[in-house]
Amino acid sequence: MKRKRDNCAVLRVVVGSYNHVLHGFDILDGTLKQSFLVEAHTAAVKSLAIRGRYLASGGADEVIRLYDLKRKRDLGSLLQHDGGVTALAFTENATHLLSADDANKLVMWRAGDWTAQVRVTTRHGRCNGLAIHETGKVAITVGDDKQVRLWNLVTGKKAAAHAFNDGEPLACRWLDVERYVVISSTTLKIFLAGKVVHSASYDRSSRLHCIEVSKDAVLLGREDGQLERIDATTMTGSIIGSHASRIKSLATVGHYLVSGSSDGVLKLWHTDDWRELASAELLVRITCLAAGQVEMDRQTERRPPAESSDFAGFDD
Image (cartoon, rainbow, N blue to C red; front, side, top):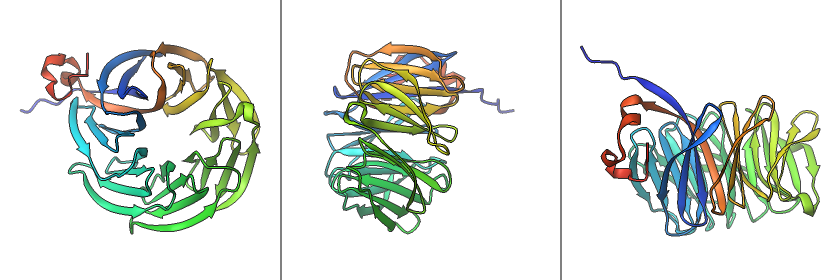
């Protein structure tokens, strides 16, 4: 009889930096344990995405690097972009990867054989952010043309577009199945069917850099190092934590929020009460981060680094 494989779930955080390196951490009992360190690009890491077993990283070198986190394998590179890869996102079931760059290109890749199934011109110039709806059929992109565009991923065509009139939009997220959030450095807006339903403004000293969503709330990383939570219904805000310098990126996984600041500090927070649980000093300039739950088999977890020759950066 075939023996059943013993699986375990690992909450993994990956951090990108200006020095081309990916730093991997596992969340273990409220702590951050470094799990791998690998030089992925020949220029700064611009974007990251994790879903299921896959990790994708996009660089200023115009390359997407792919890794299988379950088998601890380097899957190679994707080479369709003519500019720095500024945004990445997987569909909910990890069947497809969407990538965008700073040269007007949006590509949808099929996971597994990594075929480029859709290539479209965004007209953004530089795409600053993208988010895929939970159905995997619609995506939002925002760019330096101050436009928000919605894409039909089934047909590979633009579905709608509208202006963002309060600065250059920097990031976007789906808040739920109908509403989405877009930020510029000084404005947060919540949209429903392309119409603004809520907005908030910020001055230059507290300008916004990054966004995440959690439990009907919007989480903001600010220039002054403050981590702010905005209730998406009442639009009331509260400071839930801080860094010593500007917060560059945020990601949620399980009951945790991970934040990274420009001085190279990574912090872990519990989303129930916003306690700071752990921190790590990376001694690099953080550019982006991503987090996800990875199903590992215990045999892979026990494998020594020498057997993971495809990705020698992994370290158990």
